[in-house]
Length: 208
Length: 232
Image (cartoon, rainbow over all chains, first blue to last red; front, side, top):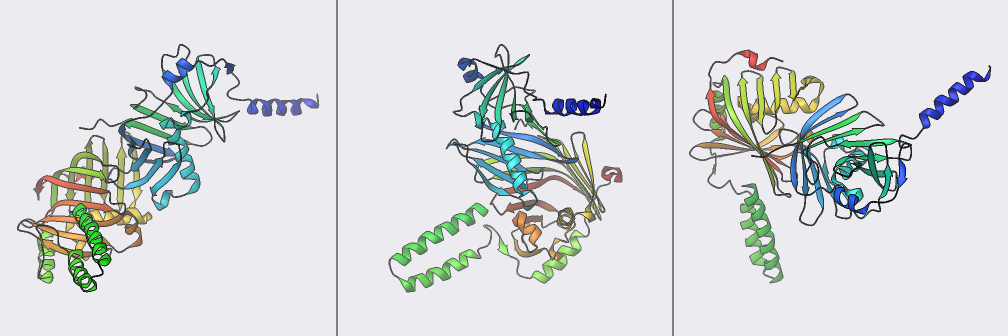
């Protein structure tokens, strides 16, 4: 009877430590599916952007552009046109800050945003070896990175891309939903952080 | 114009290099004098305003007669290095002395209302109310917008100003002097109608060379409209 509170705490701790990916079973690769659905951003798009971070809200316009040298640029401006940041990803995935305003020029901010946009652009999946995991409803294709794994998720019949994720062995870190049409130029992108409160909503602007 | 100036500067450097290589020191001095003059070149089609005191006084008097403005606007944002441009359109209202509403209609919806020290930002369903006094940056942006529209920008200590004119337009080149503004802007070019002293366009050039031009169209000066436009 004296052990009951201790056992209860142990169960609680164990359940909180349980992997969010425990439902996934490693399965044999399906190259034709992964090659067909793998997210690869190309082209040029402006997005109406809304960002909520720990109770603070900001909005603006986000440009994602594939450059002639196969690098990618991500530029965020406010509605009045002032550039807040301009990021570059080389074709090998090397990240560089072209410009950023003082208020955002903090290492954790840049690291978070660069990882988020690398995932949205599909950069972790370039030339990676995919591991296939089957869940209850979806199939996850994971590419191991230095820290964690980048996933793209399809439905079981590989008909379409369902979303993207960054995760560690146990935890989902970031998930990306694509409610509209998908890649190469998604109509809508919803990026949600699970370890702190941050939500990025992007809606593609149809230019005149 | 900015592109032209940059082109000039590049051309000047190339020419100087050629002169140096040929060892023509005297020629170099002549060239330097010439290019120094080019460096202070006026805007094409504009000449420097000669009697500044008279102009400033007239500008102050005439622009003080603008009590309200209702207009449409077109905003072009150009990302120079990326050869990208996005155009947005909207409506603009101003009422003396410190009420401004800027409403972007297309290709996105965004409204900014300034009423005294209060600022309302609305994008989609979300509203953000800011007390301008509590934020130095907002305070300065608020001040610039109002100063530009009210014609008091020439008295601002945040800028050094160069003055030009042609037969229709007064052009004022504003260079920020404050640290906060210098982070964002290299220059702001204000073009003002020389008949009614209303602002035709505001061109904001960032340190990267990216440029945003807001052109005001279908301006209605001193017409009546309700203060409710500026309700927060």
